[in-house]
Length: 429
Image (cartoon, rainbow, N blue to C red; front, side, top):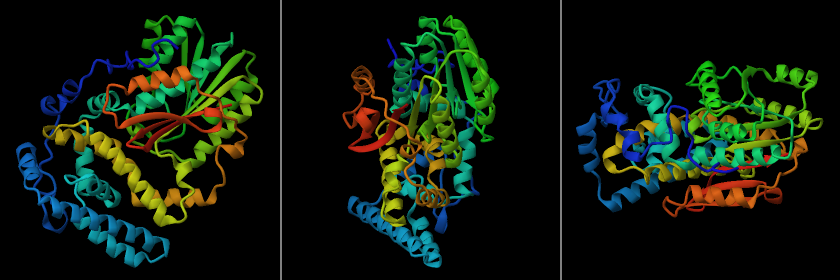
């Protein structure tokens, strides 16, 4: 497990990034168009978003502090009223309230104003920001992953547990990743496995969901990295059904590691809850006959949200979560990098903030009983060493970040910001 807390290296040099260097792309990229369009006017006639100089000038024209506080309070009351109207089935009233919320929401406002803006924006201004931001997706992704601890913490905690599970096993290692995405979780793992001389297979589950990075691109990067680490690696993409057949028919002695990262901010995409449940059921089934572990990273802590008494309280929990996430991001950005922060929020926060998505999630939670526990999964205790290294990872940041262990016999590691959980990683067997 040596050096597992170090930054990811090897996939397009993510690790050598400082805040200034990582965000220089915003001002230098030849592809970037400033957020400037005469066709993009905000609701009720307010300017929506302007190019560099205008944006900064606009940010200086702020109302007095007492007016700002009053505006935020009234917006929060409107959001609460929206949740209550939806809970009572009064959709016409809810739509009227949404109109009032949109008048106060803004991508240039405070954290709650920005969350509210994304909550009801299904097109027009929101789409415009997204399309402009996508022109710099790779650079924005590198910067986001390196600057903020959400993804690196989750990957470190999961990888540490996986390494502990396979250290005592002499057979091959087979990692099954539910959503491999850009592949940034695995370079440090490949380094460690290369030192252990473990023959390794890495399987990505094909779900039909779209990703910003093609599987072939990710596969080639990982193979190049494994080769440089002296590791014999096989990378494939198959369906869950094909995975079951392959493992049940295999005569190899494999230690299985099932990894499921869900809605972590850097991923910028959601996954079907039914597909997640199928993945975990298959993992439990296969681990009944093979050694191994299951690791789950949860960027929303949905299991906690299911205990909300009603839809209104569920909405409030979601609002609190994403307001905290935006506040934790905002603390890393000086004012002159406002455009970069807006771009990152558009790419990595906005996909999770949607009134339609939240309502669907609430319905699914109401229909479900206990999730992981009903599968018969038992907690895998996380080590004190991995907790100490995880704390070291965020040590140099503002003291608002904290890491603690919870769950069944200490099988969950939680990254908090000002006491609110942002990411939860758990290990199961």
